[in-house]
Image 1 (tube, helix red, strand yellow):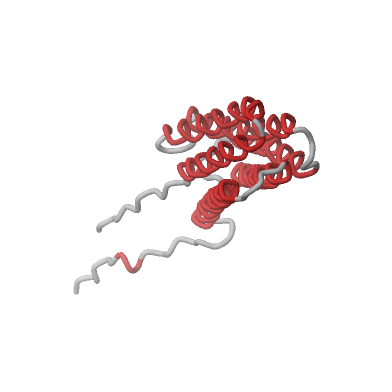
Image 2 (image 1 turned 90 degrees about the horizontal axis):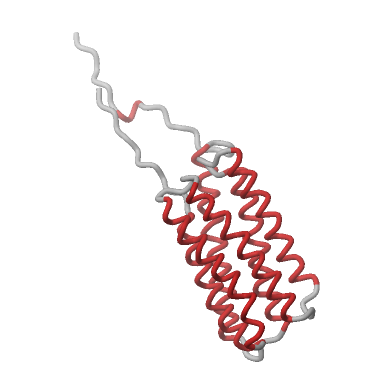
Length: 200
């Protein structure tokens, strides 16, 4: 009498509850998409909102920085494939980004130059995380990290120059940069490793 053939259906189903790698990967992907969507939405609001004010600048960019910083901190905790040094870098810079966002939101009517510098520092810190992730091969393909990091750093540096053009151009160009930074954030979505099938 022959034994029944092994069927793939008899394979145990891997756990997917809280604390498991698949569950954390889904949380990470959802966070990345949510942060990108928030950034694009805020950027569009900045483009269509008439009569830009310092309050507008603070709310748009401060809110995005807080969301991004929290995302970086959570990523440092749950991201699969991050080494211990990379987790510390992501978490520490995430704290700086949150602080920059809080500073922008705490006093919306402070000088335009100060707001722009705070926002620029936040974007540069955020870009450094992605750039380091690319260098350390924590994101695959690594050039995704390079692109996302360079765009964020370039946007941050631009914020140091934009106040000289006035409030209106800062909001308009800054909103475009915000959309660009948000879209490149999607490059950091963790890829799902292909499943391999075993045959008996």
